[in-house]
Image (cartoon, rainbow, N blue to C red; front, top):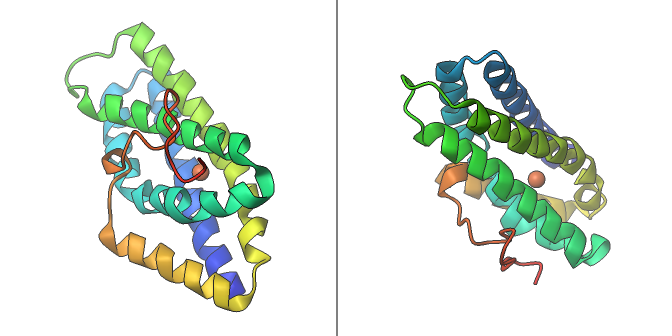
Length: 168
Ligand SMILES: [Fe+2]
């Protein structure tokens, strides 16, 4: 049971970091159409994982890591969400201005650093007892069934300007 939660969580993070690095590669070679297609894919693929982190996992982290630390995690999600949303909104057949591209690369690099460090926080839940881990796994699966996209999640929660999520 313990490993089931850990496996699900780690698999999700792999999808997240791989997706981000593929989008970054496409943007760096100015392949805008591919970057948009990959952003649409990532938006769907990681929505439930991000939602689980924000609703279930991050509030748990507040106990051990404190509000400021966790607020920053929410902010980093918003930065990635903004970038993915902006890419998806951009028409595929129109070139991306260099300044927009550079900004998106910067935002996605922040999201990438986040995804890499966020994956290491897993021990905060895998150290919990089996029943609690099963409860968390059930929540992860419930949220997965809802299948919300990343860009559908409320942008206000833990946003850079007005942190308002569970860490408050
Ligand atoms: Fe995260």
